[in-house]
Length: 611
Image (tube, rainbow, N blue to C red; front, side, top):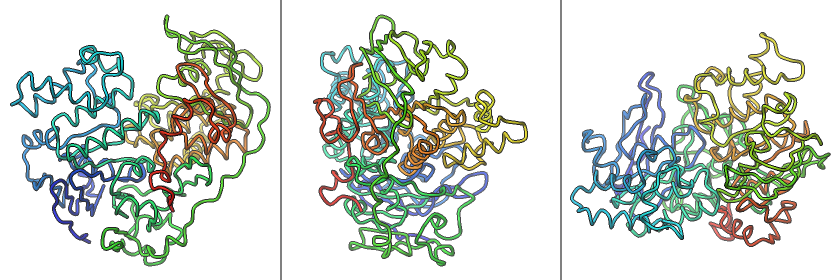
């Protein structure tokens, strides 16, 4: 069924776009209708695998291998990209349409200096520029993204390589490259994922100002609804390859009408701690397994018989500005309410982990200074701070992955060896680590099932494992993190980033640890999966007394999950205490700044808040 076509604007118009798998003809995305006007930002949100990045890539005239555009139009500046030859598309990319990647560390060339990479972008798309003009534009582009940092000259910064920059600096260089040619359209693919709140606030401010200053239309792909609420002018919500709701930002976040949108908002962590975080039961259907009617029907509490028969046509509200694909759009606002306050956790038990006077170094450079804290049984202690504050180094010392430290780390009052190899098998089993980057932490040559089975062989659960029950136990581990047992036969490159992170969590939990070290484990997850992981960890704490050392830059998530928070900067603890006390009455100026820079849906919309 065709969707009404939007009028062509000066920037972007997507009309009934359909992209299929070449092998089977099954749709990846279908009936996609979007429009973005110059100087505005359209936020595209949804769970992992919903097709957000596929739509974003279509604006550059690109499909991932195995996919093919079979219907509809993508019109940029009045030109349909489907009618352009490869040479014309190459000139379009980077010139008329630019792209900001999710991971600048892999997108930037490690073998070239920053200055050379910026110059190459201008040489490729603005060949008429003289050397002086090109050099001036490079410097202007860096200044627009607040680079170089204080105390560093422009020449010194341009001579650096990618690995000599922090994550936030790498991301701002990627933004400078994207805006250097003054494009008309820019696609931002999760550009703040993994950044601390201070750097994130700086990056978002940069994107917003550059779009307005240069009249650029932006498509901002993200699973972070709080960021989208602060940045976007309009929002489109995707589910299983379809747009189920779109409209002005204030309308989408204050009075959403699709049950899926409302459930997404219920999964967003609340910095004020006034409501519980609830995931969405079930999983989004993949291409080839989608229902006949509404794709959300199997997970929807409001579904009626008609929902299973035919995908609903869009219903218009707000004078046609707000479109909702739902038969119960009029009923959803009153039927689905905000979740209640989170239930309190049980009391903490004996000390499980204790760090005493930890000083850690990399070579001659000292990173940690007299770090001292403890984690009790059934307690979640959160470490928070900007990039480079020492959070991950602390976690690596705890896990035995960093040996260059002094002081003592005790597990159940027994001093641990400095390296994992120097520790007993029992100690290694009782402390499990979930890394931030699932791309690097999973073996690409092993299936997911083999990866988890290996963990079960190394650290057998109670009752042990046999050749006959190993498959069942692997399936149980996957289901605990909201993955189907069919995922066991896949390789990491066949999963989305969020799915890979869930596998990493499942692998760690397979050992049945006493302490789980979580290093930014939700940074790659959409809010519904993040909520499911939070619920899972709460259940494990209640059932087994699991302790958590939780490292994150997401302060709203800390407010939801942590009992105690430790704030670090420059390798030192500047504030610690019960989460409620620290968040409501922060004493350190640094903590106050972190809280002020944390994006929330409520703050973005003013006092009205989200439904």
